[in-house]
Length: 548
Image 1: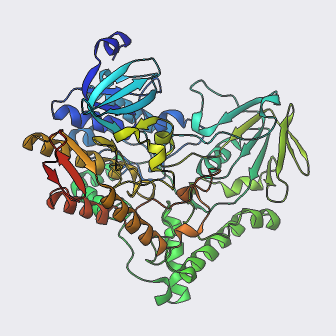
Image 2 (image 1 turned 180 degrees about the horizontal axis):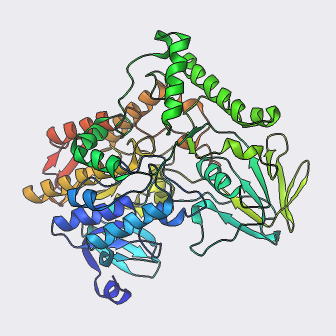
Image 3 (image 1 turned 120 degrees about the vertical axis):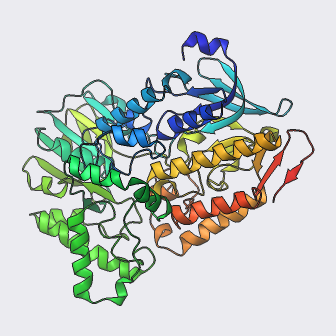
């Protein structure tokens, strides 16, 4: 969509914000309904998080054959993934292919950000304003802005005094960054930090890894995908996809059925060893069904993981610093391709920020309480304002001027993750109250977009123009989400799942923890009950159908 076209076209049936997995599929589905769609994307191209996260070693932690769209058999057959876990360039190439194959690119205005999304009660429509000063009036807004798309900015004194180059993994330049032969510091050891360190350790002159809290990381056991393996999977792909859709995590692995406490120590170890050799984010969690509910069961898995770290890291003191002591899995478990082994290299230095915190940055590098670290490049791998950050960054105002940030003053809430009470006809993809970041995101995205599409189809069929989650339904749903979470160990961790990485953020575990299958069943039940928990109307002041 050209700038000229955007200026001429100020009305649309649907505005879709974001051109990642969610936004592309949302535009595709809206077009199948014959609706006019106006897409907005702040990046110069498609890809969403896979456009911005170009840092060295960026790779998905869900297997490629499952981290892809399942809505089109021809698309499945024609695209060939080359690795078990696809790297960023391949995922971005895939999304470019999808955009071109289904002619989605012309529906987007790129290099454009949304400044405000404001409900107009008089016209019963949304007014979406961009940073170019355009206003698009539409009936529906679909916020496909992603759960990990608002990078947490570095807050270190003296940042502007640094004479070298500093970068953020979540906003990596498109232009190549030369790191070979440089002295580099990486701040943060979450997923992006671990992947970055592993990728650059062999090429940099010196690597300083600044770690505040160690994370558990599982071996990816990555490998090339041969034609025989791919063809075998594709031959029964519908069955595999259905298993993913009704599983807990959105993957084809069978959900565990036994407690870690019900088997012998030898059997526990055998299963952990089996999972470790299999690899992947669920290397240990798929062994038993109580790892996230039982302190004792979780402790067994922790012990095994720390034992593996000690076996890979030659220096016992470094191995101890790299060994986490929080409940395994309650912070995002990482997946690596040789991370722990880099600490056996003489050019890699671990800096423990708990014992020597950062004081400031200065022209030469980073000053801690114990030392001056002179470097050429500082890479901040400090994560995101997760789940809600990209939404909270936009001025969104619903009925009576009620803002989204007011709705989330006590933590992010939503009904089924698709709507927030007070914001009619505004949909969120994998929002608060959905499985979102604890699932295979593509499975959850397709389910949400399909649900929204079917809701619009229903509304058009019966003459309704407005759908809005009720406050009562939202309150009940979020109470259920929190109750489920409190039955697990997840809320005990100071993780980005609860917003603990954002200063001043009200802590709330807003992810539906029961899994993709139970969530899908509940969404289907809501529809079968006449969209229970939503008010549907013809757009007038009189509600013609109300389901509380």
